[in-house]
Length: 147
Image (tube, rainbow, N blue to C red; front, top):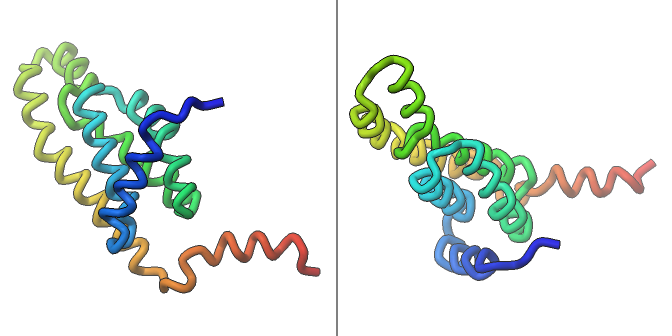
């Protein structure tokens, strides 16, 4: 069984601050992925860690499985751009380019991509009417007892 750390308190705080925004926890998850990417530098480690931490918390706040897993998967890819990116280090060694310049060149695109992911999370939820946001889960749960 998973040991509950600070994640429930952290996501409760995110929910209280970002409740008014559609996809607020999704945006907080992408920001957390960007922060973890700046620490780890590995897309696989970022996706695995945020998948075990963020996905259950987003499901606890009734986010659809598609949105929760898509948010975590998209956020995990940020580690390839945001320094210290292991991909840039390997590319710099193979292509004999300046690793420092490669790492610096990934900061701005990484932040733009994180912002675009946040914006797409908002756009996705704004495209669905409020009363129908969880209709696929409702439909699938009712399908088992319908003739």
